[in-house]
Length: 119
Image (cartoon, rainbow, N blue to C red; front, side):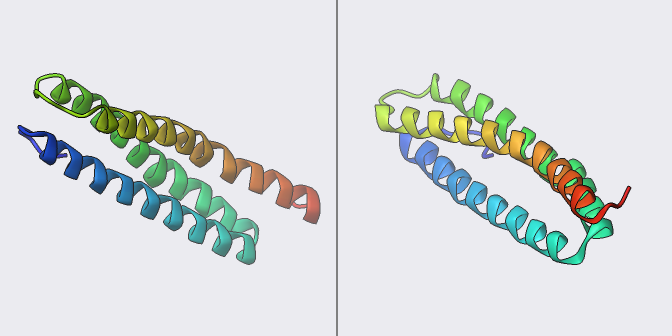
């Protein structure tokens, strides 16, 4: 996140960057998930660890950045309502994706163990 956002255009550019980053983060998670599903138990466990050590912290950092951005927005004049709505949508999306990053790997491991009889 940029340090000193002084105009609505700078804030909008920051939000646009965050929207694109969140899309790429989801895509990366999906690709790793698909690979782990193809490779089996060990890959699923490695995927769970990657989710815990990379994806979840990145999503948490984004959530914290959005809080700081909202605070900075309160200091800037003439910010269109549409920017606030986009930030609201981003905050909601990152909250949902954090839950997905935490739950999906464990669910996949449980399902794999039930289907294969592994422990």
